Image (tube, rainbow, N blue to C red; front, side):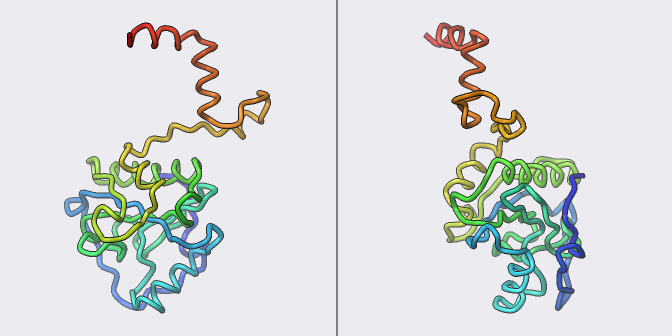
Length: 196
């Protein structure tokens, strides 16, 4: 299990009603969302909106992730809870929300979402279908960037170049680093030769 910020740590309100649970036999999907708000939006603000404006008994998502890759426990009972995040799909799907808008998502956030997905699959003993909110409801959520990433298999293919410490001049992103590595290893020539 990954480290996460508990409901107590983000000062969650108690649910205003019953939170029902789903068994793994009922789960077959994982739905990625975005909050469509600013990336500094608090989890408590999202919960307040869901409870006070939407009339839901708690925050709608099972899990939330911020730009730094911090994972937040969402609805009470987290993985086991039936959320309120995708109409007609809440029992079958775990819902995970990126806190931010389209274009705000980072590699760290994607890695965290993938960790939440992997744990859901581990707990259920099966692979869950990877979906964006727009796949099941009429919405733009989770934005083009996240939706494309979900449909490409939620791969975590970006390296954290901050870990390298920026010591390689001219290398400013993960793809540039990969291209340089392939060139240095001589693999590029082999790949081009094999594909001709």
